[in-house]
Length: 402
Image (tube, rainbow, N blue to C red; front, top):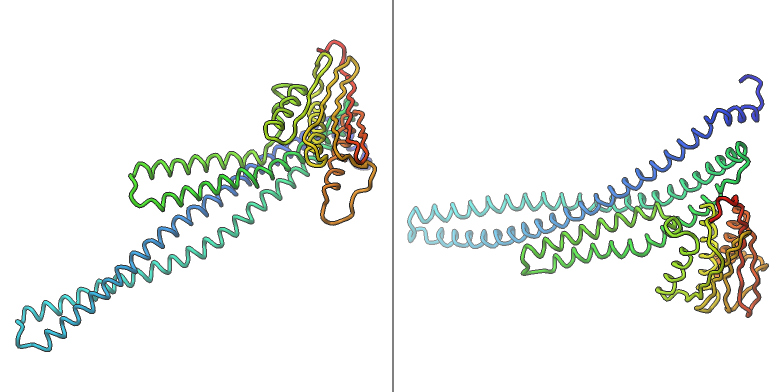
């Protein structure tokens, strides 16, 4: 409207809900584009694999043609020598024998010309395909880099839009919405996706290559065995595709199925099974549910605390205490490791040290606790272990408490 102030225009948009609708549509578009980018990357990877197989077939055909050219060249020399012998002893051979020699030389030369032309054509196709494959590999690397980069950009945009939507909800309902929790989740997803991409995904890709090598090395093998190897390779490829999809969409599903306390117990058990960290787990009080974004933040804080023990404390044991009271949930993570100075300034070195990584994890835990309105504290000194304490007030109405 003419002459209206920006805050008045924003208020009108908030009242009719159009701004929120636009932001929701933007987020949906972002999610659709993520899937499209992934499909483009998969198509490029499939094209590289197809071109590689075609190149292998072309090389095989070229070698076979070269062998035929060599054989025909040798045969041509023999026939020419035969013709010279006949020509030198013209009187000793019949006209039919002489014509037969000429015809044999002619036939060999024709066949040789055909094979040489075929060889030249195959070499040209091979060279073009090799060049195309090199370009495709470069494009595949760029596509993979672009997919990861755009995924990060999308996560950033989702976070920023989420922050705007949080402000809209706060203005309408005066109720805390954990939009910044979304950012924390997206950062966690990016970290896990990078680990899966560099680990299991690469292993599966290598396994596909190994099955191809095995197939080529088999000299006397039934057709059924080769078919089984091809099927295995397809299964591994499907698994690889699934893992790459997980890279883009990862979240702690255990919280949805189990709740906070059982999910934390499962986390401790998994870390112990993998010989990462043995945790003495205990829980007191009657369990009750908390808002989902609060449980996710609490889970991530405890997960970060346990990871810090495993990677920085210099010990392989920790304690996790969970206490439910009517007014609050208290969580304590304790270790007897080497400890550190929580107030030490971060390193200014361009290469992040282990201490700097630990400080970054602490900042992440503090930020998550701040988002959900929880109390967070760290008590640690060099050589005296570390205690991480989290207290979350139970603000749910009495009738909703379980």
